[in-house]
Image (cartoon, rainbow, N blue to C red):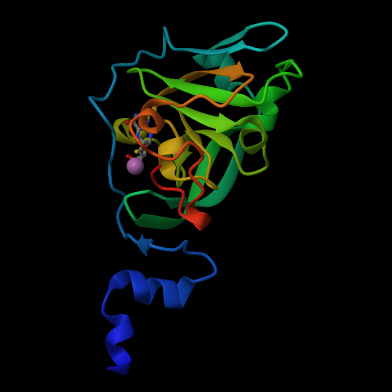
Length: 201
Ligand SMILES: Nc1nc2c(c(=O)[nH]1)N[C@H]1C(S)=C(S)[C@@H](COP(=O)(O)O)O[C@H]1N2
Ligand SMILES: [Mo]
């Protein structure tokens, strides 16, 4: 009876971590692999990262150029729309602000479409992308990313559901308006805030 409240892992996790675990989430010990389609073949020798759209000048990085940018490690929690969360992930790579110092963004730009090798896309508001907690990561918990988790580079936007953190990321397009990416076109929420459960629309 009194223990009924412990009858699901989600309720128990929420009691123990309520301030840190968004509603409807439960903690996972491992790290699930989730993506649509196959793992793209990527060659660092031809890898390119492109910044286009509403920018003063397009910017392109080779792998060597990208990896020469200042390196940062940030710790954050993962919240996946399929109800698992994973605390305390150390991501190492290039902070969004260190990348954006190389980009002149036009005043009309308000949203960004992230593009990945393999064709995946996802949209993020500019103000939530260029923010303290956002990093382009090549390593997780001090080990290079495994292919299945986005090697050589993935974006991490921890304040949004994890589908907004594209693996195998290859560039971004600055846009005036909010436009849906891949999952957003198939019914996922256009914004994806885990704290207000913006899961599906
Ligand atoms: N390129 C790409 N990135 C992607 C996806 C995808 O299908 N393709 N899936 C997203 C979804 S729905 C989730 S939950 C996370 C899963 O990341 P993980 O496999 O490292 O846990 O990646 C996101 N990034
Ligand atoms: Mo997901």
